[in-house]
View (cartoon, rainbow, N blue to C red):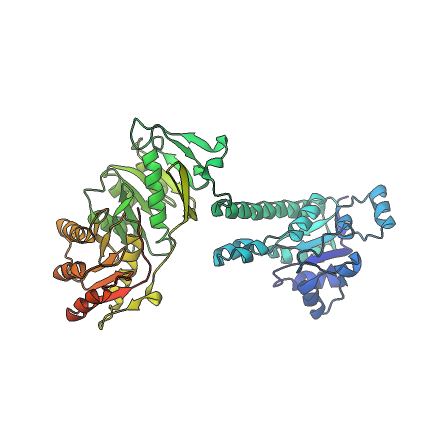
Length: 509
């Protein structure tokens, strides 16, 4: 049949705002309403009579609300084809026909964004709601389904204009949207479990997810990538990705994920270590500042930014030899220009999500650890010296902490005005790392006076802060924890250097 008259409706929604117009139409056309829990109370408070689902099924809501509508007397009324056979069965089992289903889903996606509490996240996996939506959408020939509050007003208008009925075209359109919502919802649940690596054996990936590489770190080493690269990137151009490319890309994404919510930010990495990082008012300015950090190491490096690449920036990048450029998007002209260098890899990143677990094979086995997701900001700083850092120094200290955790230990980072100006990394001595960072800054023309310093681990002696003071560094951040912390604090107090401790170490081996 084409138009169907809505005589009964099942309503059970999480978001109740905007429901009033459609309730007005249901009341005007004498529609029988079935509902549960909070939705039932909302409708009754609005002044409409409601039949409780519990009275229909003769079962109360059980298991803390996990089971309310999962019953033949509910699904029979939705799934029944309006023919003699099915209607006869409904009559035999005293099951009412349900012509309209208004159901939305628990906010799973929003919950994942707002908390890491697994119990809270799992509780937002909707079971009854998704089943009701799928059942009503499947039976669109006889039933209408509304799976989103964005359709409340549209359906209310249709019911008003069509004397309480909905056409087959309208029902099919609503069903199509319902299946899209269902698919989107299930995809986010799958992505959550996939990213959480519930099965922490990285080697159980199927052969369909394996990608042989040209070679490993060196030509005499074989290598294979296991994973779904295309879920995170669109490869726009360039040669096949190598083992080293993938390792560097991972390091670049992990670094830039720290800056996703900041202003235009650009980073250049070499052998997984950031050698240039900056945040500025435009992506072009951010690129200039990042390149200035170490324009020698940038040769053959990995480039990444947190915003769209425009033509002005692309023209500058085009002059540099690089391996990979990663950005969320590219202006059309910028993309065409960058594609001219056929071997250079251009990646459009879909999301900056990173794995919650790190895997490494060693000693005939595998070790797994949580990703270093700690973020230190002013609110968590312990101010250890008489002089506290200024507002601008504090911003630079926060910036330096985002960089220091992504450099190989031992590492020291120097920052000034939201720019990485010097770094020492991979050193066996923290003093060597400190001297290297200062030397690099001076070598590339930076004045270290007024800059700040971050260390990935504590200072066992005051030698690093002494060297920093000699270079004009005015504020220092470190985790603390040495039995000789006070020696460094005393030196800073004696020389008007601000020192902050975080209590969080960032070793990276």
